[in-house]
Image (tube, rainbow, N blue to C red; front, side, top):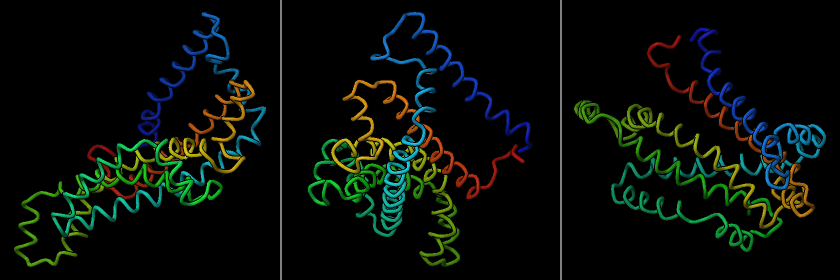
Length: 256
């Protein structure tokens, strides 16, 4: 992909973001919406600048939790799906388990993990994030592993390829687009899960606790500023997944 084409790919989301922020600002000021309900983006940006050191500290604490849970949960989901390729009964059971556990709300699991690991243990919040992201990754990987063409399986069977060769040379490479699609979803979910888990316990300098404190003190603009900082971290994690996907997958036709 040439540089101009790469820049053009960034233009639509940038224009959309600017348009949304501009409409938000005009709507708040035009309809005189109170900050308690919805502060304007300019006020949120000012709060981010004024409270930048504390925001960075909070995002660092919550970001570590989100990233650790993301790695553990996605890794567990991927490995479980790969194990399911060897035994069809296990694969069917994993699919049902993924749907069941994926429907469990975070507000139900966070207090349970606090009881198991301790409310002040980082592993409590990490476990919540890992559980949330594990099953989207599991389902996406199971779908991807089953996407390899039957003709390719037959060809490798004709050559007497070992199961390990089929796995590493055919099924796993074929699954990567699905895996990275699931990882993109998990990147956003990991930040959400980390913040929600922090509402039920965790470090006092975390973003979740920070938001609770700001809301209790009626500093709604500061709470929105924290949310904006969390969104920025989520975009960074999402972008990291995109870069990994670009490195792992060959460019599609028409890309340089």
